[in-house]
Length: 113
Length: 117
Image (cartoon, rainbow over all chains, first blue to last red; front, side):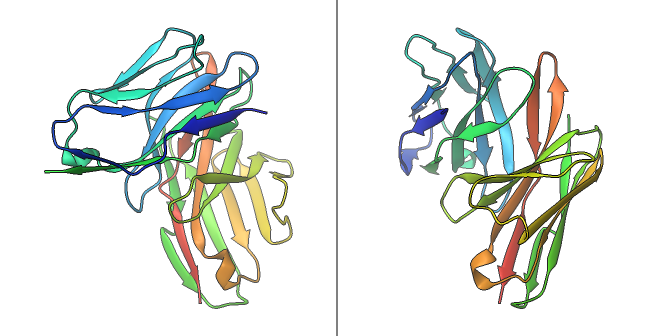
């Protein structure tokens, strides 16, 4: 079955540091890939997505590129802020017609001033 | 953008009572809604998939008689935790599916924190 593997956290960074959170996946067909963010006590918000190979999703300074050859969708940001502290989930959705999501276990990011 | 609401955001109930959680898609119609459960510091666990006008499909290990799901309209799904016990305490999140360009996407509600005493 489909699966998503993310690096374990917490990831602890100082403000303005470079961020990478690794995500790899296993899936049949051509999945869509997502990054969601969850702030403390809240639900999930879609951060960015990519629907086909070589697509780059970007939002709020975050970006991730759909790499089919390495089955990866790593999340990056050039300069993190304290307000970016949250849990980040990588997820995939199987192909068209049904949107069941498979989530990674989540990676907590802690950014200090 | 698509907005999903949940009510209540927090609820405390006594052991043995039942609790109903509502999930609404506010500005779109959702033929499919999903219910997740999230334990502290863990990922989301899909409990069931709910299609409007039909019975929900439960994931393996989820008791359908314990977690009653109703999806009576294209904008409302409810989860009722029956005869709640302390081990049912958790964060419950719903999502609603909408067609975006060429694929379906899930939009998540803000979650409901259930505490059973």
